[in-house]
Image 1 (cartoon, helix red, strand yellow):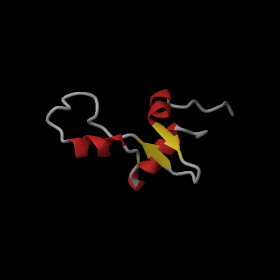
Image 2: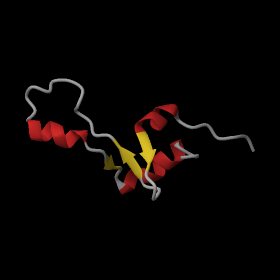
Image 3: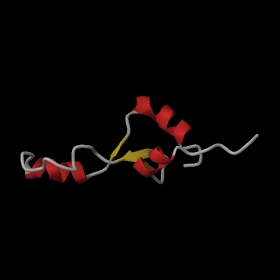
Length: 65
């Protein structure tokens, strides 16, 4: 069986943690930042984990992660 291809777009967006869970960056950080509060922008910098319903789809896109 041939090697599976990694979805390169997903590879740039998701990283796995040491325990195997998948981290993601938060959205809404690139522009129109003046109307967002400092507290909101600070919290958007923090990474979070993907939802449980999305784990199966992301794992399929990242077979070797």
